[in-house]
Length: 228
Image (cartoon, rainbow, N blue to C red; front, side, top):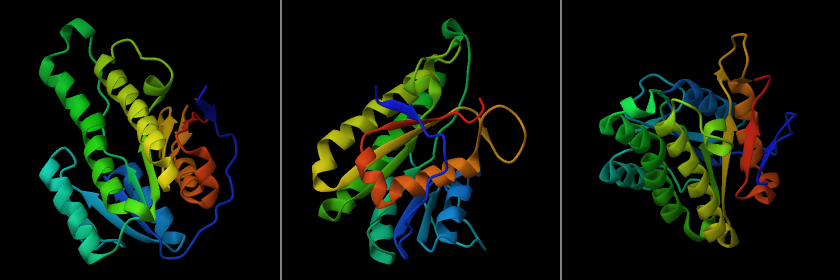
């Protein structure tokens, strides 16, 4: 199969001044990813609905579910900074409800935030990377990569769609130097105890995927369940 588990924290080959773009950079996972790549010597640019003030990395305002907003954000990224070497998309949401009680609006929101936003961000990223190549990373889940969960039809369907999207991009553009990967975490922990995977480990995995060693994993969905 295409899913496997990383059981160690790999060494990374950090190149200075790559441009790493984090969408949802003000969020809990996005901000940790941004800080980790910044510490490694990369130029980090955030994309988020809300501007960030006083932070260690600049943030371009963007609504990841709006086509024109995403296009404008990548145009600003290109003109103000540089072509991205990697784009890590962390925008999404989790929700659950009994299937027969799930409204169409609730369904649409889950697909829009988890799947449509990924399509819009990755499409612009590929357009701007062009022949220079680059890396795309998405955050799926066990529900999307392995098996849908009861009471989570919308979330499971959206994250499953993200898996197929990543695989399709990898298949279409791998030969031109654009790699696409997805991490499938269980519950993400932010330093607290419990069953799941620590956000710090996901940062390390992303750093590995963005390194030269990550090229050989093009199109893979990497399970990262920690102790959960």
